[in-house]
Every structure is written in structure tokens, then in C-alpha cells.
Length: 209
Image 1 (cartoon, rainbow, N blue to C red):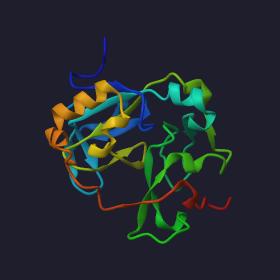
Image 2 (cartoon, rainbow, N blue to C red):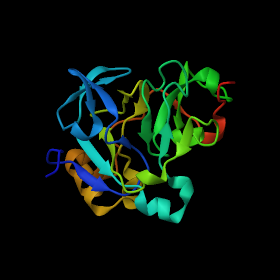
Image 3 (cartoon, one colour):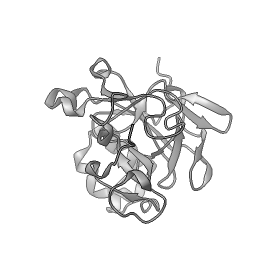
Image 4 (cartoon, rainbow, N blue to C red):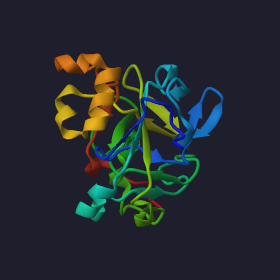
């Protein structure tokens, strides 16, 4: 039996999300990602408690078969900075993390920027590609706006539906997004991106050890 309420969907692309046992910060404390349901209030960086509108249960297995570079990353506690993360975390390579500007080699607008997790690969012995997780599910969360939410001491980007990308995702996820965000039927994005800049993987400047 699924632990996720109706309107949750399973999908292959994109390569975002966190592992099932990742502690996600909610209004009632931390809860494993696999137990988050639509309607749960999660802690966001910019807008306080926000209700989840869609839980996406994804797989990276097909992408890993195409390239081992698409494997999930196991990131040890405090790899990025103090309590970042606060516990070891399993994260999909395309999931972006709000990273302090002093760890970004390019100029950004603000004290931090969204960096893909794949940028951490190969930068430290405390980060490795975990091939034992190839077939494990990954969980991403969508809200009524583009948010940054708290997971294992990291601020991670929420799932943002984009009209131009509907053709690149599988049928089940596309139909769920169209039901939840009907603006997509008119080729309109439901909401704009959040205020944080996004930077490419090669922008990461790891801490000296």
C-alpha cells in the first residue's frame, strides 16, 4: 500500500528529489519524505508554513542506466557547512540546494543561490555516488508557488511546473500537473520562479579542508 495520498504520482524525469528517509521539516517537526502527504504544512525559506499541493515519487533508475553520472549522491553531515546537512542525506543529482554565496565562484544576487546537487560529486570524500540507491524512490514537493523547503538542514528547491517542459515528462506526471495546475493547459506557467538565482554545477567552490 502506498504511503502517499491520491494525487501523488510516480515519474522518471526530472532527476530531482530526496531519499525516502530524508527528514523534512513540517509544522509538527521532522517527518520522513516518504510520509509527506498533500495538505501537510512544510517549512519554507521565504513564506513560512506552506501546504503541499503535490507529492512526486520519482525514479532515477532509467537515467542511471544511461550514465552513471546520474546516480544519486550520498552527502555526509556537515559537508557543505555547519549543519549543512544536519544528517547524511540521499539526494538526486538534479535537485538544487540553496548554497551560501561564499561557496559560489560566480556573482549572485543575494546571500545564496540554487546549485544542483551533482556539483558536489567528486569534491570531497564525504560525498559519493551511491549506486545501491539506483532503484530507490525519490520525493519532490510542489506548492502553490515556487518555494525553498527545509530538508535535513538544507534548503532545497521545490518542484516548479513549467509549461514548456510538459512534453519532456511522462504521461502520469503530466496529467497530475494539469489537474493540479490548470494554467498549464493554456501554456502558462502557474507561478514565477522564486527569488533565488540558479547557478550551474561548475559554480561550486567547496570549502578548504
